[in-house]
Image 1: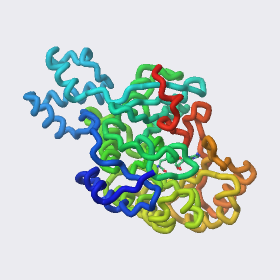
Image 2: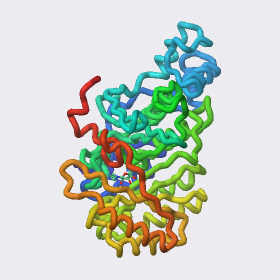
Image 3: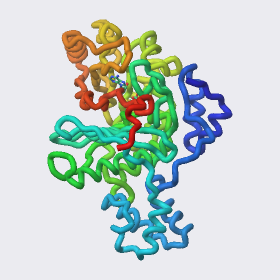
Image 4: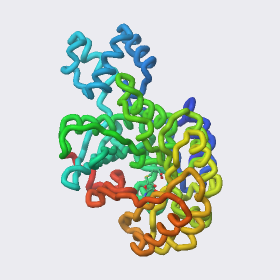
Length: 398
Ligand code: SAH
């Protein structure tokens, strides 16, 4: 764990990222921001909007329509192989693909469970940073759970990723690549159930998406814009999950997007939340909920309040009542997540009867509440279990 000073922050942030970075520079001791002066991931088509792509091919001496051709291959046909790009002159294919479709993430390890319908991939980036993504096929949808950072600086003590600290922010294209890979295996029919599409994306893998605001926003745009600009997944089917970085939530509310916001609350009172979600020392429960309700008002979308049920820690009846009081009548619903105990953790999941009573108390106050399906526990792919960087046994190449 390290603390970052304002100079380092300024070095590590540019443009639109800065205002959020400035807002987070008061993070309490123990929370981390991305380090400055790191080598950046190679630039990729998915980092750029259509105008940026045309400018990039123009810089290579090519007309703008080449960017559209490349985009149709990547976002529309889901290929980054120059051999498939038969509408481009053969010499140019390799040049354009080399300049704009560099390999960003290499799959190091694939694990599956649920008869192959849950698949976790451990990815290695150009600089050796590790991230993980998880594909989950359900009867009615296919969800990609993606990482926005390698590691995480938010230090939530019950989360495996939080224990390892932050390695670095991912670029927009490194995030999009995870969805692209899922879209490709679905299109190829490689997941039991026949060929299909990725319908949903959740930013619930490694990292705090709103601490990597500019790249996450660019990735959301790439994921949701119709092909050939992007992958064409509905904004309403994309969920950004946050510990509650209030200025960034407010900024997101102004973006004119209809993505779903999930807030990892985990406790209705500041005393406990300060411990479970340390950034609460900077932005309190009331401020976080105020920003979340503001997001709901701006977008018309119900916010999702995430609550990991931890035995004898946050599952008391009085905390259910307190939470119900904060949420009743609001555009919000509660998602209860049975805690996945992390290695060495002193905490465990709530007793099922206690969890059922917690749920009943919320429901009886008219607060919509569901219990999160926790897929992928056997492959360490469930909520809070993504911790590739801290687990050397995962780092072997297959
Ligand atoms: N940084 C984002 C995304 C993190 S992962 C956020 O905090 O929202 C998505 C969800 O999994 C969060 O709600 C997180 O608190 C939860 N989670 C983390 N570790 C968990 C664990 N061990 N058991 C259950 N849920 C966990």
